[in-house]
Length: 85
Image (cartoon, rainbow, N blue to C red; front, side, top):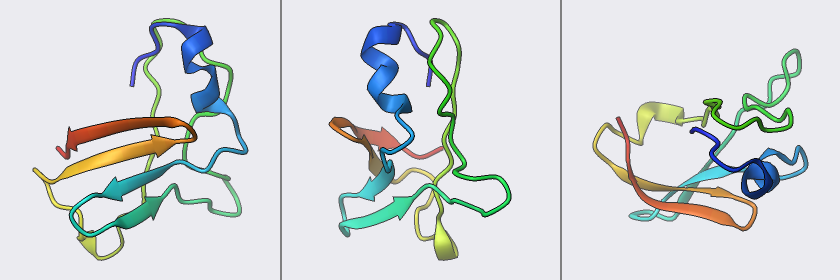
């Protein structure tokens, strides 16, 4: 995702927030992996305008397929009806 407004984007970068991908069809939640050596697979440095940031979500068993519609939830923020590519 690209940050256009750093003040509005700041809550998305709070390290204590546990983002997840939600499959509305099943209600399943997919978390950001947190390997012991690297930590959470997401960007948590302070946001900068115009920069593209990333976040990985676990997909055990490949249950989320290309073309599926999902939501991404990060604290109070929710992006709904996203299409998996």
